[in-house]
Image (cartoon, rainbow, N blue to C red; front, side, top):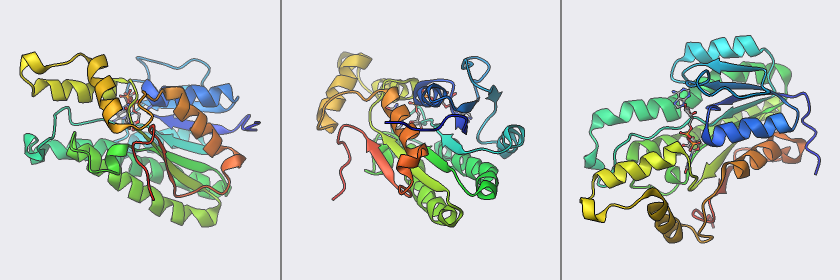
Length: 257
Ligand SMILES: NC(=O)c1ccc[n+]([C@@H]2O[C@H](COP(=O)([O-])OP(=O)(O)OC[C@H]3O[C@@H](n4cnc5c(N)ncnc54)[C@H](O)[C@@H]3O)[C@@H](O)[C@H]2O)c1
């Protein structure tokens, strides 16, 4: 299948590692012009991109500056995510003060990105936005309540943006991972282990294997290139009638009637 994205301008926010990095590489492989934005952009620069831009999505000024530098853009992909670092079951394992930073990165960061780049998409009358969300935002996950709430909020905002931008021929969607071996996933394991007596602790592979068998009908880890393939498809003209959707790539963990 031809994606016909050559030369299109793509900004990937959260591109230094994990799923975001794979998505940026996926667009490079399609011969797009890619800008990689991340807090750690200089520590882990991507080859073959137009620029590695350092910035923090919680700072609207950083995103405005990136939008100015890039100019016109065709596709905006927001992949940034972070947890509280604590195990939130029950939710009072966390303090109310743990919430603000998590909401700021996962939800307000995405809103900042939408505000910074929407005027460019509206002006060109085409293109797309894509947000990485989570199964946790759809099932009231007990692992990390502020993270789950932030992702639920982001799914709702994605739908709002999809309605607002549809008259401008701009599509907005979300992709929802389940279990992918990245530093974020490892941080969930680490937070949970800290709450257990030493004789009940598990290594990451054992914990992950057991959890996947429990929550996912297909029972296997998802991998970053699967998200890159879907992101590329959604950006392409094959996705021209897809907007306002949350696409689960999660081995069947979340199923809607
Ligand atoms: N890995 C999983 O199992 C999983 C499951 C569900 C959802 N997700 C979602 O997928 C997306 C990608 O996650 P990942 O697992 O690749 O995570 P990751 O931790 O490997 O990568 C996240 C990236 O975001 C960057 N980042 C964090 N805070 C930032 C900020 N304030 N400003 C700029 N950059 C910042 C980090 O430097 C890093 O490069 C996230 O939105 C995450 O919530 C992941």
